[in-house]
Image (cartoon, rainbow, N blue to C red; front, side, top):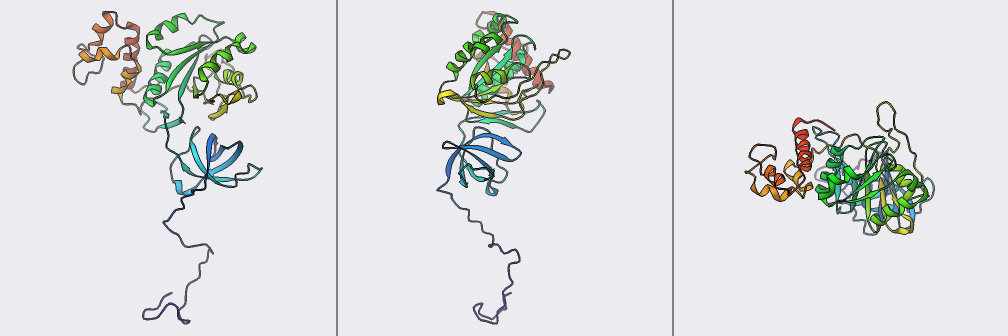
Length: 335
């Protein structure tokens, strides 16, 4: 406690002790220039599993990051105990700039964005051809999210032993989206996994799909030394059971790329996407919008897309799919 008129260095000046025994607070934050680079593999209840060089390190988010979220795929700066030994805990002190961010909302009327993964190059949209039945609207929504995030989409069709992929592939042919068709037998003998790996080489690929489509089974075939739990499809509802509860990044054999397995979704909200950008997910229709009136919703009498499709420039089913997607947003309904 300072007394006015006294020199604080004098012996009769009393200084109140710091009861907590810690240093005074400061606004100066350390730069952590000696921090190691880490790659976030999974996030579980505030604990971050990071790959630092060739070691698996458990870490927690440093206080100076505040509310800044850390997600799977993030490249981070890590300090502290980086040995990876049991019961050690490091700190993530910085999140590096992201090259891409895949987002979704629970529903179209949900204002809260959820970052699915960061720094992915490709989005593998996994859907079954039967058991459960394919959901083209969900595929369209994932395509919109992929284009909005700057990711290259890849369509992976599973269970071709139960149904033909021809009809579904025909409706997406004009989009130029790469695809791989697999069956359960091919996954068992490794042939399908090899074909999928060719599309994943040198990339960070996020896998999305609704429950029961065989997404985790496929991931297990791609990374056989890291088996994740799988479920089954309910015979009454036709829906799968959530077995993957958190996103997990797994290295492909030989270090040829990364697979990020994400929990199954039953809806893919696009509240974060500007409706005017949805057309970018339909490159076969986008050139036809040049004749549209200003601020066209693409679902009105003067829309030029009707003539564009009628003239054979695009599949009318794709226009129908676009309008269903836009109308779903307008009604604020989920899939």
